[in-house]
Amino acid sequence: MEKSKKVIGAGIGITALAAIGAYFLTGERGAKNRERIYGWTLKMKGEVLEKVEDLKHMKKEDYEKIVDEVAARYEKVERVSASELKRITSELKGAWAHISKQLK
Image (cartoon, rainbow, N blue to C red):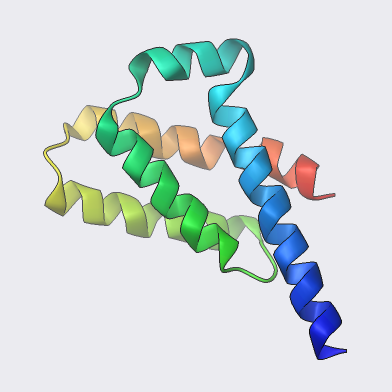
């Protein structure tokens, strides 16, 4: 039973990673995102992806908490404008609708 829970958790994590990656880098919205991607935004999105991968069951609240934690760290560590950080944070949180559809 424990092994099947781990396999299901890994499957959910992989599905979430694929959904997040596809949302940000493909399609019409992805073209705009690729034009405006800076090095720190890729790092930030990567950190969010890594933390999401560790979740066994993903809920909106958990996802948004991860985004807020990573954004708070970037606010202190990186040389990031407040407006750009706010934009990328809201974009990451807005991706939940797409991610949740992929998880179902």
